[in-house]
Image 1 (spheres, helix red, strand yellow):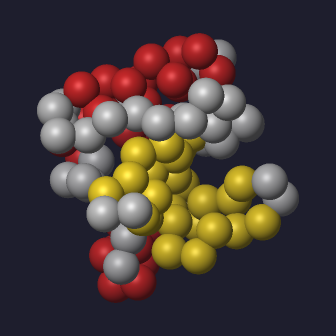
Image 2 (cartoon, rainbow, N blue to C red; image 1 turned 90 degrees about the vertical axis):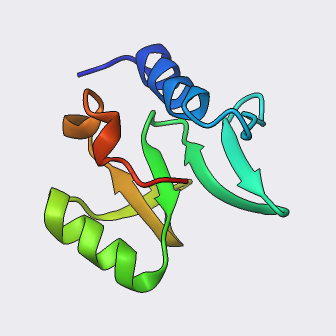
Image 3 (cartoon, rainbow, N blue to C red; image 1 turned 180 degrees about the horizontal axis):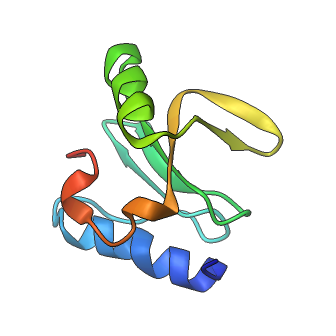
Length: 95
């Protein structure tokens, strides 16, 4: 199991692949576009991406994952990025 710092480094690697993005947030890193958050790293060290309903269901099915939870609640439209994908950036959605 990876530490929170290792997961933060992976989250930063995702962002580095998209120079138009900037990591925001001090205690809970996230990215946004046009004022809408679309990815984040929660305090548990889990990464969530926002998807359309159809794309989210397809991603969850393909990679055997679930909805993303933060602060004890599921975040509507967000999918948990499983650690099994942390070594394969190409599997991650194009943000």
